[in-house]
Figure 1: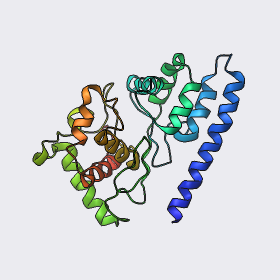
Figure 2: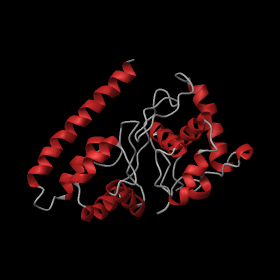
Figure 3: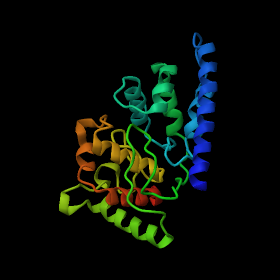
Length: 235
């Protein structure tokens, strides 16, 4: 209950920041908006350095610039939807996307945020994530991460789900087509896999992620997300 109350409070503060920035942006929309001001807008959910401390929100720090710019373009074109982003994106001109993506791509990614229960996070897009278990012990998390590592590196033979590392890299560093995953917030990863599986998110090129997610169970998604949370980029 304390965990839920804490995050309800965080989300309320986030909405407060967003509403304040909405009025500020409306007042100056006729003039070019400095990058610093845009970072205040983005920072309400993602932190100014792109390392969101809200488990349900993604880390933007260290994402490939081209990939991140494409996500902004997809939100703008309504090819991807999220309640908060759908409110924010009309305030940002497409000419600003490249600079924003470049800035966040150059930020150092810090350790991800661990949800109290990796199996029951709130989804960040249109659909809720699966609920598969209660709060977990350290040992249970370790075992779950080990299962996730096997799925990430080898896939799931029974359902022919391919290895995540084949596209995202064994260290999760990603590229311009497939996002960086290492250290990503755990609840966010589960939510996106769930949304791909249900069809709530459809902006994956050639439907690759939708096809993969349909081959994963709730438990397998939770395991992969647990492993990704612990994954570090190769030095």
